[in-house]
Image (cartoon, rainbow, N blue to C red; front, side, top):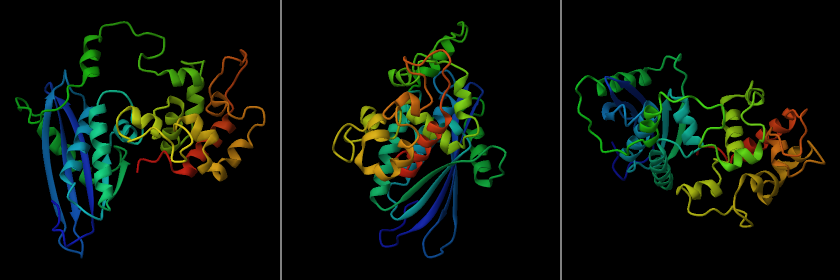
Length: 314
């Protein structure tokens, strides 16, 4: 796949897809490469069988496909690389790394993205809805189904997805009305009203990008060094301003780098400045029973985060 060292530039589109059937999970990849200097377009596709359905899932397969493909491309320089997936959860997870199944693949992906970027490559991850006709994604889906044909032997040595095995073991258990076990202390501190119907109100009418940004800020699982360092995909937990750990609070209210972008955010309230719950649509312990989220403040927080570009995937 890589070009010779003396010929740089070009573009690559990579489509990934997953399949779960016949008690197997696998992925398919289709790569369309346009070398520099208008040379002939190259098309390549392949499939990989990951393992048994009890140990893998389609979501982790999409993440594995992304990591596997990026590893193939590490020799490229000055390329525009676009990754296409119809799995919205996988795309959101790459944009917003979380402690969930597939985390090992996320760590691999971030390390590979950094290696590629150091060589002048530009990487973009795009979610393509399933109702969109995309030939490259269609080819990747065909390959994914090939990977899960009956009696196919797994080809990859990959991490066992603990949550998948655990979920299957718990499949007969009664669903709890409480918070999920993996909801962190951050989100509980932001919103004392969880779980609650107000979350639907918060995300209603948001674009996919806006929803991704709000989810990062509310969960604390954001593309900020404080979190990225904790999951081993950043070298330090310090903010680029070098004044403190880069937490959600520091990012929203204190980092000097974003003073200009923060002006509209602070104009939302004189009395609630620095109140994370107020600006992220959560209920604080001091709020009474008639509390409702301030949607204007929430939208201002989202606009601020987008204006900084800090939470973007690349």
